[in-house]
Image (tube, rainbow, N blue to C red; front, top):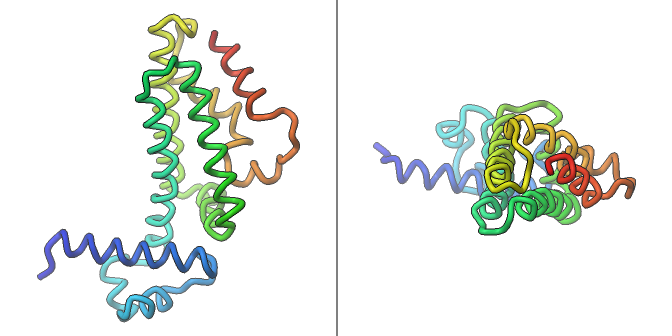
Length: 193
């Protein structure tokens, strides 16, 4: 019988292989048989760890969302003023999405599909990002940088205002340079002040 560490190692190998193949040929064209063949396993063995391909896609996507969340959490924990943290978090999201779009177009398609089809993992990511923004805003309110109010609502409003810069589909469709992400961040900061 396999212990949890061995199971985790094999799941990690499946996810890593899937991510590499998704980058090379796209997530829609990659089959479970492709992933299994690359790992010298049978497709049935892959299905012992993931009930369906959609679970593998979600796991790869979770890693992409995790990169954004980790960057945002690092910024939120910094000693910078809340205004700077808020600007840096939104800027980091914009940069990570733009970088993925420019260098990993096929992974960007996976990311975009998760949003468009409203996968649970995309909703979880949005909730985590709202909590990070709310934490920053709440601390800014406590420090007197922002006016008192509902930090949770303010976080949702900031996220909504900046969605065209952070959503993988909208950032491509709304590539018009006006307003810029910095102008929108300035607008949000002015609304919070």
